[in-house]
Length: 72
Image 1: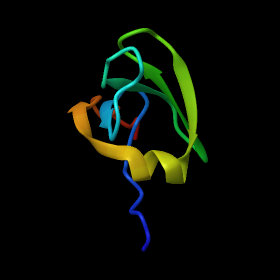
Image 2: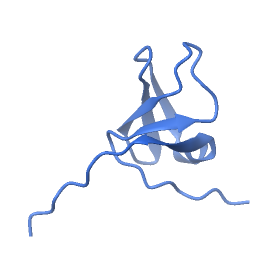
Image 3: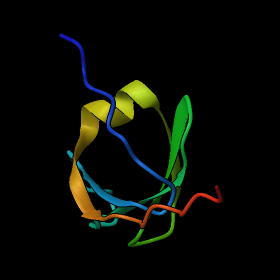
Image 4: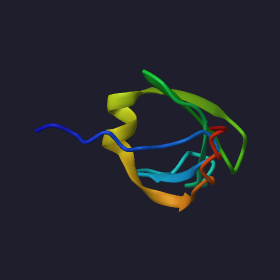
């Protein structure tokens, strides 16, 4: 079964399936592309996940960043 791609932006704060070993379950998105870099908000550890693995573990948004206005 296909996992849907979650629309995320740098700066979003998300919750994943399992908490980090430090006990925190809030992750900030630091990089988006074929891989996703997330940073634990509890201890500051940075983790890279393949996009498929991130989408599989994703459970919801805690905070969303605002859309940047386009200069047109």
